[in-house]
Length: 372
Image (tube, rainbow, N blue to C red; front, side):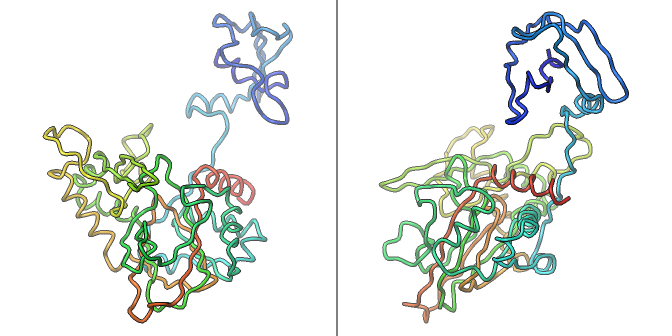
């Protein structure tokens, strides 16, 4: 059944859409190979008791190398080696990266690939010479994929306003956090385009949570294990909207193979850290439960918090009009310094947008296949 299901002939797979033209349950469970031939590169099979609608002369031809790969790795097609991620501190980010020019980014797919690759490796990039209009952030985002719509809209403005419903819209200091951790599917990429700014304060801060997770695992694996096993509550509780989600602070990919050679960092998928939107703790006496317990979780959380606030790992930038930052919202923590007293009444306007992970991963793969 498994071999018959792999058939790629024109009767089984549409040559244009590359979609299957049959369903796996259509294949009889007692199907058998009645004739097998092979050459140096392929094996061809004729079937006894084939799926309904297929003639007796239907042949399934499969590449031998693909079958070997399927047996050893579970996939027919080869995959390139994963692009390694780079954990960075301030010095490393400054020396290893450079800004992208808006026109180059918009007109050159090669530049777009370089940008997408940096978002994968470092999780953070800056763009300059972005036109100072409301739609620029849309154009930048849609080079990667469609905008993610939330209750803030397709795009949203960051300005200081009275009686704000979000601390980002105040002049206060905004600590390190990630956006929308209270949603089932938080955005993967966040974009912020500086359209107007005459303020001396309000510098943006960024830090690599993956570096902090790695350093925590090496310094205190018990603390790392606690943050990767216990869940924390995140919520957004307002009259017009209510969202709630439980997440592990450190989220890992499942370990599927080569367990003896893998380190914790090989499993690191994302981090969930957003103190402004942290919900109430679930108080219980059963320490076997995986919800965040103050007795066992407070110290690991404090150690992680100390690691992300080390001066040498914080990249600071006072964004100027015409600059846009794009960062991995499940990896790079962002913050903002408070505005200075003299900034009162001065204009500061950033426009933001989100992009989900699926379109980013798709774009990165397509561009990598093209340019590497």
